[in-house]
Image (cartoon, rainbow, N blue to C red; front, side, top):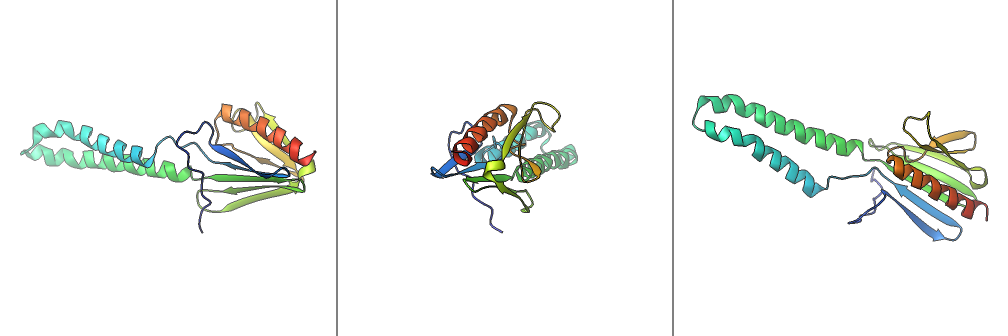
Length: 176
């Protein structure tokens, strides 16, 4: 299954984008912030390996080098695994499509499974929960007998900004 593409930008203030396809519809794409680029990942692994090997230079030609080398390589491999695992766990994409007739939220999880929610746009109500959620200023959409989270992976300031944008966009499109 091919994953939806994330927009690629060199400078990003928010890890989400709005696309207005017409005055009657808009689409939000949100994903977790990724501060480590592929180049940064390579530089991090190489730097760690080089700096971790500096103490071993004095042991060249001794038996002690062979006793310490596996631990340095294991630490490098553990860092590589941890960074790769973290990148995979952040492979989330939420797509919110708002039209006059319906609002649809589709979340693609790291394992590729989809979660979907749909409701008549007129009845959708964005809510912000300053406390009581899994994160501060938890943003949800309520409608169709369900309440679903939006952008729980965003930072607190990003969720506040997203709530305002959601509220304005729903008011403008669903209730003209």
